[in-house]
Amino acid sequence: MAKHALLSASGAHRWIACPPSAKLEQQFPSFTSEYAEEGTLAHSLCEITAQYFLGEISENDFENQKNELAKNKMYSAEMQECAAAYAKLVADKAKAAFALCSDTLISLETRIDFSAWVKDGFGTSDCIILADDILEIIDFKYGKGVRVDAENNPQMQLYALGAYEKYKTLYDINQVRMTIFQPRLSPTPVEFIIPVTGLLDWAENVVKPAAKLAYAGKGDFSPSEETCRFCRAKAQCRARAEKNLSLFDEAPDALLLSTQEAGDLLQKADDMRAWLADLEKLVFETLISGETVPGWTLVE
Image (tube, rainbow, N blue to C red; front, side, top):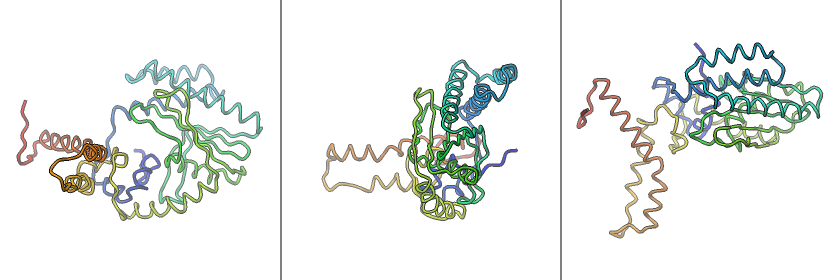
């Protein structure tokens, strides 16, 4: 069984903003979804396709491995096209890097350790390219429900920290380029460049203190639509409930709401809609399991 980090890179946006959520959600079982399984398959296809484009495996090996993956019912022509586009991106960037630096390093699906800043912190980077003074981290996203930005992306920056720690004695790294490729939303990758000094400053002054609090289950809760989206405790988190319920406490003096106030409430209520849906799901699943929820029953 694969080990999962308490403070994962993929969940960094959550535990940095809301440190105690990391320990709180450990009370709930880990679960996967059809989308997550589809993403895992797409990543496997991306890896072997990139290996083939880079000349790391033969055409025969590539076809055999691809045919194995194609047995999965989630495999599709669209997935194959996305993997080919990712592999071409990696190969093109590798070619450009080699043109500037003969000892360029390309590493696919690399285990990254960032425990120097986050206790027991580790993850896997899709692609790392090192050439001269620049380190590039490339991340493939198959999902199309949420657009992922590269700018100040904590997952990518943790991967960058781990890669920097791993290769800093071999290369004189001064800049980090983080590239996210999400082909089902855009054929053009998004990039963000940060100096190593800025990355290390973020690690020491933002990540390290937040990770220390999160690992201990301490700090302040900070519920929001983005922070709570994938948190396993989101339906029963009291801090989230109190934040949403507090919207009703802001009663204006007048008897009628102004359109401005209505607009402000709608803006504030983005997470409330998601929260109510999570509450409905919680009550429904509780009733389905045979337990009772006072005031609620299942009807056909």
